[in-house]
Image (tube, rainbow over all chains, first blue to last red; front, side):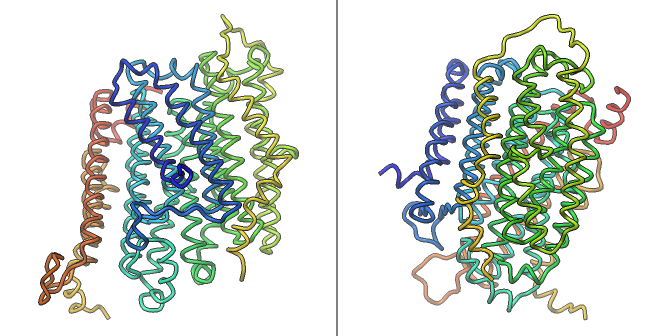
Length: 493
Length: 122
């Protein structure tokens, strides 16, 4: 019975937990962290069952209030959505587990309940965007995610974070505006809001109104790339992710920017389809923007002195990899992009969390003051090094696998230039990650006044993320096999 | 050739484009944050108007069943945009709250001024 309603529960559970936290008020806030941990843990279980169902019985479909589409709202979870649902719920569970001991000290006491509520609302919107098959529903969830993500940046009320949050909110509302305009013009020519129905009506609509359909694709492209921070539309990202509290940065960098890529994938491959894409210069613009993003993101990251700002610029580069994989429009390229969504989520969450932990424990956030920290606090520095090595793409780790697939995709698409892009940018990654690792272990003494204990929740979260980094490198074939049918069906030409 | 008659027929659509561009221009060109947010609102209103116009038929009435002799407009876009307006109000409220906070910290709502103050601090 409950399994039948598993997909709406993905949105209902975090929303209900969030509103209960707000309704019960400050007196109940000490239970808030337990409540949010329990609800994210149940989300992990739910998305696991959904992923199992999808792989054995095909896509999970849910009609709200039993209204059949095209009238009602439909949730449709295919393999790729199920895969992303699992990433979202597990990374946010681990982030909350990490925050169990340390987050309370970083967020002001009087807003901690609001923080958990916003976190869960953001989570609900991410899960909703991934599951829904209705375009207007996508827009509503998009706006929920913009507001709650901007609020998560500003939550501490320091002036840098507020400034970053205003910038983020304005640009991301601009992006949603473009997406809504695109939805309107798609509705105008097809008469549907359900993606499956739009896909079936689109060829006729394109024959009748080619300009509208082309404009729609352009608007979606700009709106969604602003929100997922593809270069040169990334301007909001470094400030927002760099000045936010650690747990917010981890979620924003690891998950929030990726969810828009998932919508983009759905639109490009399921709605517009490859036949249509070959008529427009989408491939050219995606490859150009992602190559620029990969290089300039890394070059700007090298210049940073603040460790979190550096990680934020590195996200700009990594988003470039994902779009590069999509832009190649080959089976292996898209597989690489999807794997990189997973691997980057794991690596970046781990990097942000371990960097945040070191900042919290030592009170230092400039890169050149972090010398010798690894000898005092081995665990966060080891986790950071593992994440850094995976970012560079050292073979047994997960970052290597996604780069390998991206390279194969580039060769399949007869574009060996992009293999060079991947190789050169890996050196650039090494340039800014490895000095931190080397100085962290072998640099001069850290000269810390006192050594704090690391909370147990943070230890468990960092160890599980480290294990995941190695495991997804060694056993990547499980993920590839899970995704293969979904990716293959888009490339039958 | 630029067809004025066609433009007149689609007066609502032309109006939405003008409004959209006005809002967009205000967002880009003004450094005052309050004005930026007003521009954002104008732009969103233009999109909402565009969405509603899609369902409009000139001479049509509200879709209340039981009358055979009249043409109905499509009620779905209007219903959807009600949600859109609510969303835009909450975004505006939140953005203004953030601007108030910024004003408390910097004593100005001008982004260029804020950037200058920050440079001086560094």
